[in-house]
Image (cartoon, rainbow, N blue to C red):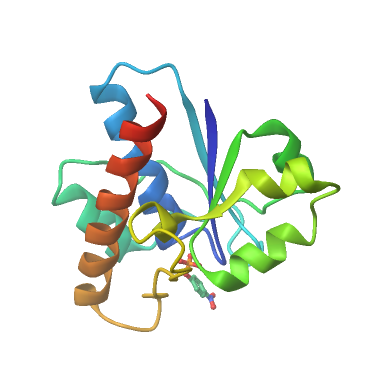
Length: 151
Ligand code: 4NP
């Protein structure tokens, strides 16, 4: 299974989602490939936001070695599942899909927790540490459901 996590900057939410899912994949000894990307490319080459690094470390996960990259068209072919963090990211990715099969690969990550509700992971960038904690908890539960569903 190849899974890509996508947000706007690839420095706050999707790096956390990548780190959390990878840690669960390792615990379950699954041979899955996990990556993340940002629709904007504004922060390409940067490390994750320190507040994401901190909240992950509080849960024993090191995401500090990740590097932001832009989402590209060919990611849709390369990955089996593409999880958008919010509705804007979802719409941006869907625009790049060539057919219905590709569209089916793209999902809102919180639909794994609240099916069919189309909720967005709030963007914590302009807030404080509390927002990052909330995002961590949501992503942790959603990633748990992803592993249980596809393992
Ligand atoms: P992310 O958060 O999409 O979760 O990585 C953001 C990071 C940077 C910006 C916005 C959101 N920005 O405006 O630079």
